[in-house]
Image 1 (cartoon, rainbow, N blue to C red):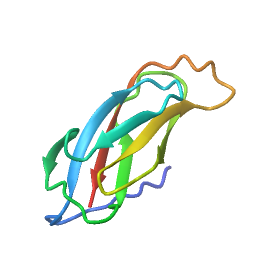
Image 2 (image 1 turned 90 degrees about the vertical axis):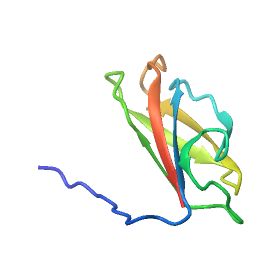
Image 3 (image 1 turned 60 degrees about the horizontal axis):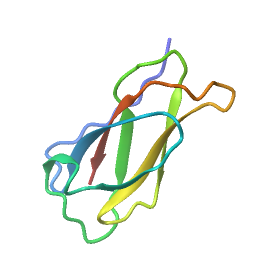
Amino acid sequence: FEKVGIMIMDNPSNGCYGKISLDADGTWKDNVSFINDNLGGDCTFDTAPKLFAEINSENGAQTVQIDIRNLTKDGFELRLEEEKFYDKLHRSEELVWYTF
């Protein structure tokens, strides 16, 4: 038995979404832009938006986590990293993100 959290939005007015593939080697992906990397939506913000990110694939036996930093009105930086006791040789994963 697991508890699962969900969020439902009905026609968000000012949001955008995108996806990106990253290696889980702990390297920061700089300048993920809301304008250049997005798949849809209005990606113009006056201030830093709220950001939700999720790993959308499962390409390795070890778990990975998303780290996000430097969230601004124009974009953000992110990385994937395995737990410290794993071998750091995790395959690439696909991440999806949504801002509003």
